[in-house]
Each structure stands twice: as structure tokens, then as C-alpha cells.
Image (tube, rainbow, N blue to C red; front, top):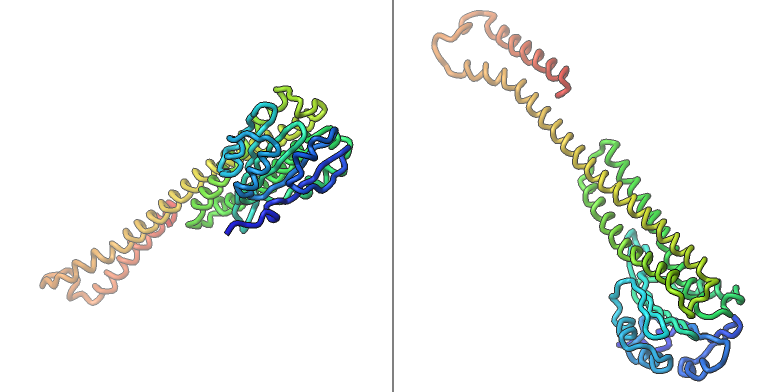
Amino acid sequence: MEAPAESMIVNCSLYRDGQPTDLPIDQIAKALSEPDSFLWLGLFEPSEELLKSVQTQLCLHDLAVEDAHRAHQRPKIEAYGESLFIVLHTAVPHNGEVEFGETHMFLGDSYIVTVRHGASVPYSPVRQRCERDAHRMSAGPGYPLYAVMDFVVDSYFPIVEDFEDELVSIEEVIFKGDYQSDTTSRIYELKRNIMELRRATTPLLEMTGSILRNSTPLISPELHPYFRDVYDHVIRINEATDSIREMLNTALQANLSLVSVQQSEVVQKLASWAAILAVPTLIASFYGMNFSNMPELTWTYGYPTVIGMCGLVCGFLYWRFKRARWL
């Protein structure tokens, strides 16, 4: 059953001189005719009908609307005439796992539309922060675009910190010598999460670089320092994930090496005890043959002598193996 349109529309506000006014979605086209104003429309997993309605009023490109409806897009920035279509991947920690979603944004001269899919947090804090800065909001929708991108990128930092904590935990398990069978699976799980995060963050370098290199009237030059800040944050995240990935490779090799060493130690101990036990086994096998003329069969001290000899030889072997650190 399809959700009602009201649940898909997070907000629809018209900004004049940085001040918001709530707007019915069917009055978007009429409101955008007003000078010095822009629309900020927030949608969550909208239906095809709702997107078609927004497309008609804002003259959005068919391909961009199709991508925004289907989701499952890679992070990218594309120009369609005088508008931009931007895709970001969002990441949200949940029950020890990282869930990924998508945010699609349409940016025009007088509007910005955000479309959220999957795991993400509402952009209410972003909106509130923007509305406190009426001066930059009065410059158009470029500032909300920066604010959303900055919010998404900053949400990656706690996840990277969780990855670093998990890496430290894995290293402690490996190097304290307490072998655990799930250590290798933990390493591979963390590597998988790192790769998924990198698929979300690496394209942002090209996206923010494109915004800074290509002059567009949709983004005021005075906002370029803000996008450079986003660019710097993305670089920090990528450097951190690269470092974690390299450390995980080292941890995996160290874990496999330590497992091999532990297995070798077990084999040495088993071989040592086998050699020690082989002495009395060999002597006892001789005396179990029931021959008539066995040495010491009629000697009074024959039995204790054989037992003593077994003990001496076994003790000597134990001392040698202990000295060689096999036991």
C-alpha cells in the first residue's frame, strides 16, 4: 500500500530574504514567480506521481527524475541545462552495523529539492542552522546545498571513529595472544564496511572539485570557501579510511602469522610428548612378546630397573625438549 503524500513531504518552504514561509506543494510554480525568493522542498521516498507533480512545476529533467525515483545511484553531480542533479550516499550506524541510503538533490536558480531514500537522518537540523543565517540564505539555494553536503559528510566522521575503535579492539585481541576464531571474520567485516564507505566518499572529491572549478551562477563565489571546507573533510575521511584499510591488511597478516605460530607450537608439543611416550611404549612392547629367554626375567631387580631406565630416558627427553622450548 502506497504511503500518503503527506508522509512523503517533509517540508515545503518558500524563502524571501532568508525568511521561510510554509507553502502548499501545488502552489510551487506560482510562488516561484516572486522575485528574490527560492523554494526548499524536502521529500522522503516519494511516489512516482508526487515526483511527476514536482517535475511539472519545476521543469525538472526526465532522466534526473527517473534516477531520483529509482534510487540505487552512484554519488555524482550532473548538469541538466541550467540546473544540477546531485546524488549523495548517506550512512547511519545501527546495531553495530552501517546502513547506507541516498539523498538526491535538484538545484536550480530558485529552488532546491532534496529526496531521501533508505537510511538517513532528517535534515531538520540543517534547515534550522540555515535559517539562523538569513544573510547567506538570501543569496539563493546554493547555501542549503552546501549545508546538506556538509551535514552528510560530517555524519561520516563518527562512523570512521567507530571503525578505528573496532580496529583497536581487533589489534588487542591479536597481540595479547588470545586467539579467537572470529578474529579473521571481524577483519573481513570491517574491510567490507570500509569499502562501502569509500564508495560513498571517494566520488565526493570529484563532485566538490567540480563545483569549485566550474563557475556556475547557481552557486555564489562567496560560498566557494564553504565547499572547500567540505572538500577538506572528504580528504580527511578518505585518508582515515585508507589508514584503517592498511592497518587491517597488516592485522590480517599478523593474525594469520600468529595462528601459524600457535599451530606450530601445538605440533611441537605433540611431537615432544609423542617422543617421550615412545620410549616406555617401545620397551613395554619388547617385554610383551612372551619369549622364554628375555633379559632380566628371572632377575629380582629386573622390573624396577626397567621402570627406572624408562623414567630416566623420559626425564632426559623432557629436559631436552624443555630446553629447546618445545614444551
